[in-house]
Length: 466
View 1 (cartoon, rainbow, N blue to C red):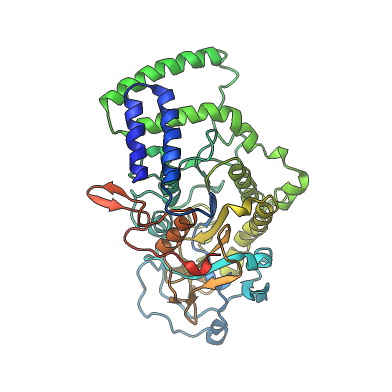
View 2: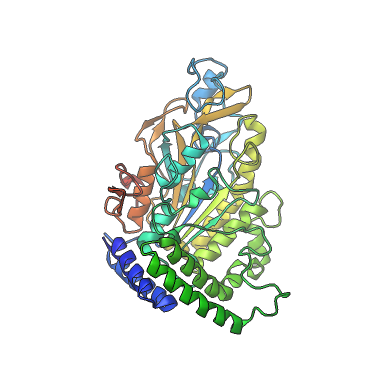
């Protein structure tokens, strides 16, 4: 397996004492080796994933259910509280939002997403996604790593491990969390698990005046100059060589060396990449940077475009932190809680897709929109909706995707997936396929088991491929 061979060479070169030069050489060798080991020609080279934290309600966004209007107020839900529900199921509740058909495909979209609705003919919808849990933490793990428990690599880490970097000056896998906080499971969502630590996500606070902290020394430290940097790196190289010799197989040192080397390179590349002032006023306005509602997610969308444009392979954007507020976890009142969340992302997402297309980046870029699970068609209290892993919606856009199609259906009331059910395994298998990777062949031996992103499951969803 090429990915396994890469780590062997990398470890060998590091351990024989070639320091930073060895790391750079092994990086180049690994890139060539893995590229030659693709299972088929790729259609995608880079990915932007948009993750809606909290469980975006399908029947209030993309999954129109007219039966809810007919059954509104009826008590036909489960009599006992299902596992993971936070309250017993209430009466059937119709969506408080108007739905309309859009595009030549006639895709139903609610009024909370007016801008995305204009682009449905370019999207492929997965209408019968399912999760194995109704709980945020395990559900978020599952959608990112394919497992309900911590300790497994996320999709971004697997892609970094399998394909390596497209540039030497920026990270391979970048995470842009909500400025109000990290999602459920915190940084474990971006973990490399049992893969070498170098493949974990690089977390960037897009709202900070310095998105990459401590990239440059403070002016108060006059001794921190190029000459002292050289002396420090020379000493660090000696220490690293000694540590590597005494601790063979410890990937944390590799990751530490790589991060130091990358930080040095980012001193030249990162300031320009993260400086949105270089964008025109019209572009900044289109992403919503001039509006309090959209400026946070809009900034992350614009930054994502700039990063993939400069060679970052995988960028993950999060909408909403963990917790009971400012996310998609609408337990209290779907009428008042969902619209502000939808408004914060709708215009930025639509602008991102149009911008990628206008710059020709859609030819090799895939965009994924998803969440950890859906919500119940039954009311929680009087106006909220509870957790529901039974069905939810994801969509794909960009390279290799057949626009204007939908795969799968939920049942009449949107409680369970009914036709062509898909799990995270199928989504992950499809993403890897677009990258030129057979999901069954990307494996790593861990504790006597050949682990993979899709566990022992997963099928490529061919109906959504161009």
